[in-house]
Length: 221
Ligand code: FPP
Image 1 (cartoon, rainbow, N blue to C red):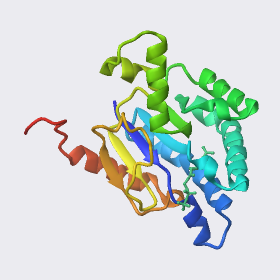
Image 2 (spheres, rainbow, N blue to C red):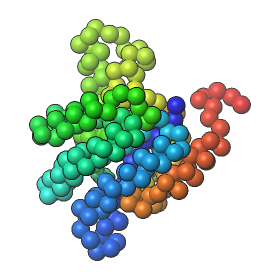
Image 3 (spheres, protein in one colour):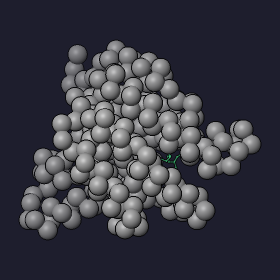
């Protein structure tokens, strides 16, 4: 098991650096996912979590939010074959109730069609915030009269997998409300590379460094 989580930051700056509008950066950012999925399959990653849209991203200008929604719709349609052919299970995490019915339907369809026999499970965070996920988890436990044990909390989170490696591209040193529970013992990697410039090669270097780091999980030696 190897769970990699990525905060895909820097699309806007990447586009601005070439005098292009921000949405061009998002478009290239979405394309980059394909290369990284391939890298994950080759490098033994079993779970990949990608931060595509946070609970805070609604604060962006309406035109940018609308563009991201359209891009997501196109992505779900055009990449369906990639998921099916490569046996990648697609799962969304986050509160989908804010999305259009059409988008919700596309998301559920892709989840249904890819749920069997996966080599890699890819979580896409959509209207996701870790605090929101944790609150929704406690409400689920409460509604089912379940105790707040670590095991119950873990199994009721949108994403029940502990993160091994967290990468943030784009040069900032923040977790930005991504997988806070699951990252309790994650090894953190921050790179200045802007997301559209990230590559399979850089991913491979990070995974190699991860294997060289000693993880003690609070113990000694
Ligand atoms: C950060 O760039 C990126 C996001 C807001 C979300 C990531 C989105 C994508 C990779 C594309 C959409 C994905 C799918 C699956 C359709 P930023 O805008 O914060 O960049 P900046 O920090 O340079 O402004």
